[in-house]
Image (cartoon, rainbow, N blue to C red; front, side, top):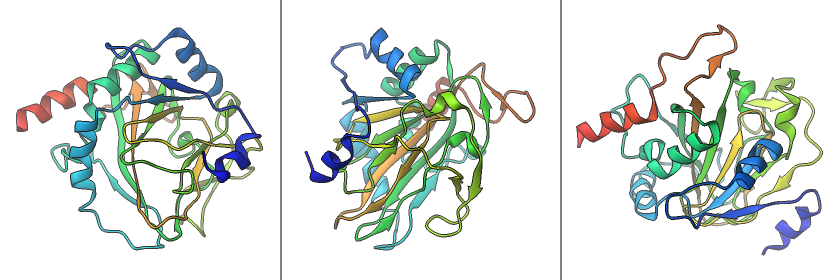
Length: 259
């Protein structure tokens, strides 16, 4: 375990769950931790074959060494585009886990390859996903390690329990990640996650504060952010469901038809 991880461990308790069941079933303790702490780490959730396939596409995406966070975003209005890159959005082991948490079918809300370049590439500041578009009901983010990620490689930070405070005031970042949302008051209990191996995930609530810092290594950091919403979830601004977002099962069937 790295010295950097030891340095920040005292700020909180990090709980890591092994995914050892053949049917990919979460325990009640795991589900309780997600709702209590606002996040859950699961080892070996994403199949390595799917990870390898996504990485084959991800390595084609250009980035600037030492530059800013580099995304490649799924477009729900053109779902056929880059389906190989975004295939983890319909990976059954992932969607079934999310459905177990919500006890409902899930819709694909957002998908994004997230590269943090080497030699000082910058991640994102403290923020809540609900500071962009607020969703009412079940909504979460699955941070998927596409390669082994050490704490020094712009590893994810979370603030346990911060989701229970609701959506907090935010501002637009103008320095390290221009245009992105940033907390007005940073959480005081942030914890740096331990290193993740490829296929490991961190599932966190859409209102959980999280951030990534600089990638201090000589290797790019590859991760995928798969965001889901329960079928019953609604947009806070309109009170309506987001009709653009497909059920994961519908998107999976669409992509299978393209094969």
